[in-house]
Length: 115
Image (cartoon, rainbow, N blue to C red):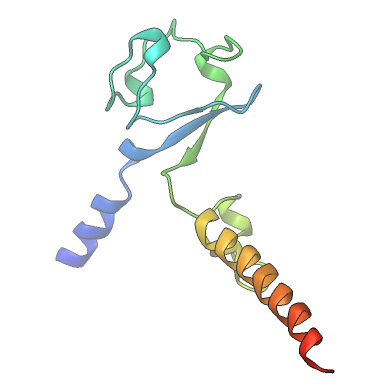
């Protein structure tokens, strides 16, 4: 039963980030919004209704919940498709992509040793 409580504690929406659908600005509760004097730690739901996007001045209703930082990107219903890379976080995807590029470069350079 304590395992179930710990899972619920992890899924709190307090750390959820919200992205402006008009310009792509991401409101992160950990950082707040300096341009509107919103302190760090202020949840998106606690922002005043008159709050606007600091980049394009879109209304608060133009924002979509994109989940907490460090989670797999994309729609949750699509995470099960593909070869398993849909469940990777953006950092893991970067490591996979650039690691494969570096390995390919090393293989290419090693061809010079085949004289």
